[in-house]
Length: 369
Ligand code: F0G
Image 1 (cartoon, rainbow, N blue to C red):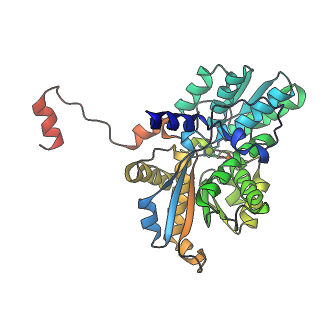
Image 2: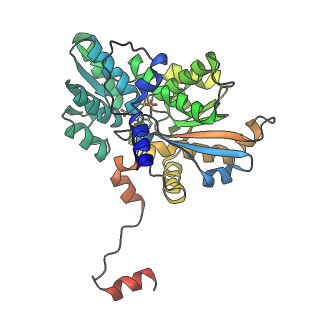
Image 3: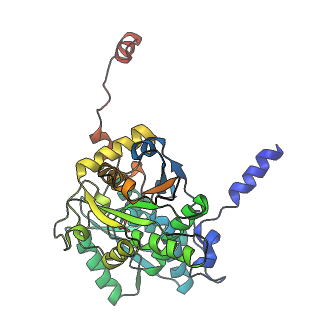
């Protein structure tokens, strides 16, 4: 009885990323904290991937799909929405490939403020659309892509008193950098490598900022190499020019002109990492491997990290780049969103269940007994 009570108290002690990391965030005692207890996501050791990369390598999965709305966006949204509330009553707006809109809608609902979202018509996953709608956001689907939607919301916020909560809002980056703090707190230093998807490039900017800050105050000794991956049909940074009509099944990162392009290149260059691309086929293979070998269900965009990890492993990159002084080299793959966001894709990717008669004989025949 006593034990049960103490573990309950411990669970209640976690109050979200602002509470845990407030000394590193732009908040004061006057900031009304709007939280859904985001963050504190698990870093899961992947036996399967570690074995593929080789002896002396440990691969970890930062499972950001376990945030309250199912993606990493919640870390930044708690800060962005709390700051809107601190500055006075206001409405918020964003363009989104889905997850930002789900998160903005949820945090705006919790704050009791208006939320408007612009999405590319027919191009966002069902789970994400359902979230934005059920949380009561004003959802507008445009006949255009994410880049068109972002240009429109930029124009609107320049003229009207509505706060933009895309990742060009610096409070979003501040909140999202807490994910690298968590990784370092857990590993007691930074990993040697971090692999992640790159879309609008806010998240790679945030992680790199977080690592540099922790190093700056002496909490970690080194910095990781940042390894970003885009989908091949939506790889403007890799190709060196905007893509007018980006195409990929990883709808979350179907972006042709990332807002934080320059910052992503800085993270890549300062960390001596790289930004490369993977095909949709490689993304779907990684998506299935994560689900069937590690038991971790992510959305396709998130599987981009593991597709990238495997691409580099096949080239021998990690063995070549790992510091020779290290007994164990740590690689963290960021899994940005939950698989339930895009149930259609999961069902399309695998064999549908067979329908048989509702009797024992028919079922036993199917299961081979
Ligand atoms: N993974 C997922 C699941 C995402 O939703 C996104 C971005 C990314 C990766 C890429 O992160 O843009 O910071 O480089 N989604 C945005 C949205 C664009 O509107 O939900 P990024």
